[in-house]
Image (tube, rainbow, N blue to C red):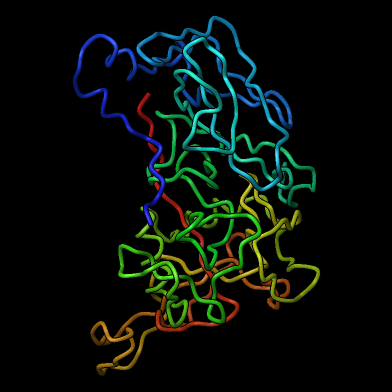
Length: 341
C-alpha cells in the first residue's frame, strides 16, 4: 500500500521552457492564503490573479472563476483540477483528470456532513464545504495526504475525523469509518511491517503514535487539542451515551474548524506525558519492544460518552499508562501547516 502523495513539485528543480511553466503556481498580488475560496455551501472559485502552469501553458485567472462542481457527497474529499484551457473542475478522483487533454491538480477540499461551530455550542446538520479544509499546492498540510484535514487557527492541521481501523486504505480521517480503539484496534501500517490485513493487538499510546507517524502526523499536545476542539458544546457528552462506533456527524460536538466528534465521544491519546508514573522498577509493558522504568502516564483528551459534564475542549485525564488500551480510547492526528506562498 502506498500513501497518497498528490504533491509532485519535481518540475520546479530543473528543465526549461514548458517544464518551468508547468511547475509555476503564483498567488494573486497581496493575497496570502489558499487559491480557492468558498462562495456558497457547495460552491468554490479560483481566486482572481492566480497563475498556474498546465501542460506547458500559462493559465491566468483574471477574475474569480467558479469551479464546476459535481453533486457533492457529504463526508467526501474532492480535488480541484485545472485544464490548459482554464477550466476548473472538482472531482472525487485524485489520480485521473476529469477530462481529455492537459490538466493539473490545483488543490482540494472536504464536503462536511454538517456546518462548523459559529460559537461554543457546536455546529449544524447542513452539509457544506468546510472552508478551513481548503488547500492547494502551496497552502496545505505538511503530511503526504491532505484529505480529511482542517486548518486550526491558521496554525496547524487536524484530522476532521477520529482514527479508523482501516486507515491504510483511506487515510487516518475518513467519514463513516469504524473507530479504532481497544476493542477494534487499527491495522498495522506497511512501513511498520503491516500487510493491510493484520491489526495491532490493542490501541495503546505507542500504537496510536506509530500509526500517526506512518502518515506523517502526530498526536496533539494539550494546547493543540484545546484549540482544535474549540467550539464544541462544552461540559456535555453525546446524547445517546453509548459508544459512537463510527466516525459521523455529532453536530453538538463539532468544533469551529469543523473537527467532528471533537469531545464527548471518545477519549483521544495526546502527545504529553506526566501526572504520575509507574513504580521504580522495570516493567515489560511495551509489547516486546523493551522495558520501561518510572514511565510517566500519557494524557487523554476530550472525554468519552460516559463522562458526563466533564467533557470539553480542555478536558484531560492523566491517570493511565501509555500501555493502557480500552474501548473508549481512540486517536486523532495533527500535522504542521506548510505555507510555500
